[in-house]
Amino acid sequence: MSKINPIQLQKYLKGVEYPASRDDVIKAAEENGADKEILEALKNVSQDSFEKPTDVTKALSDDM
Image 1 (tube, rainbow, N blue to C red):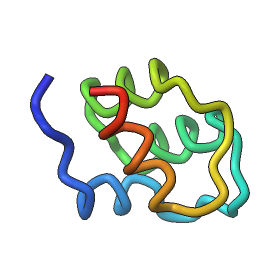
Image 2 (cartoon, rainbow, N blue to C red):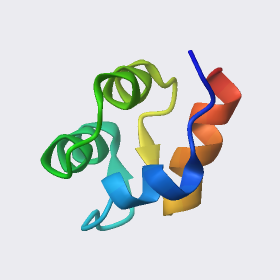
Image 3 (tube, rainbow, N blue to C red):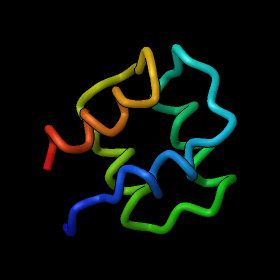
Image 4 (tube, one colour):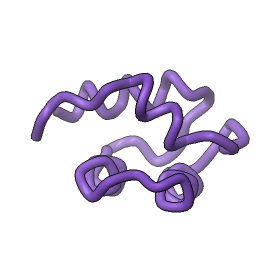
């Protein structure tokens, strides 16, 4: 898997209200047009919830 661009990731997460569950983050990413690679990464991330947007980026980086 290639490295995920954090700026692009935050565009896909537009509209998420934090704290948010992994399902909330995935749903927002789908609605905002995230590609298959991003969606799979979010589905496979080990963290179940996120306190702020940067937590999502960090969790994806840690799991790669």
